[in-house]
Length: 219
Image 1 (spheres, rainbow, N blue to C red):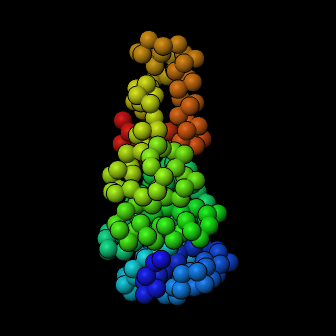
Image 2 (cartoon, rainbow, N blue to C red):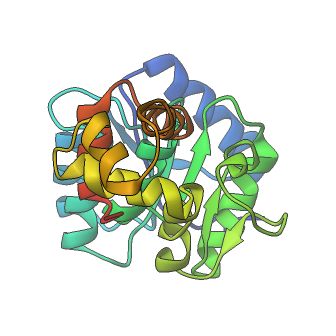
């Protein structure tokens, strides 16, 4: 169980969700929420004014989103633990959150047991992600990882060595025909590799694939 004396801040732009989370934390964990804010900018300002132990942070919020707010709060005080609670459980958002300094990533549709595991993991300075996100990578079944570096590496393992070769050329601006000529594969195979990576990473187009690859240093 998480420590009942923890000072928690909730950052989410949906008041009904805040009230629901406040109820769960009090009834199941015995934790009283110290405060709540409705956007990332307010979360940063609140963390400047008060010393919180844990921030429960949404991603999609107005003014400043949860990723940028996480990065800034961690810059101001690396000791604050940040648990992302979001509906956006795709690989790019999970990776961006961890890269920004988040200590855990829990899906909003997860049960309270998932949240408890997140608290237990961050208390041991481990990274935690909801069990339903683990299909992105192969690992043991306790969902805790020892370091952020170990976690971030999973995004690289999702992509096969051959796909990584294709990805490098995509980032360099090669067309499918040029990729095929360079790697001695068919144009259809080159296009299939591109589509497979988009599907695995849940990205909409080649531009977003290039951006994700550069941001996460996959090439």
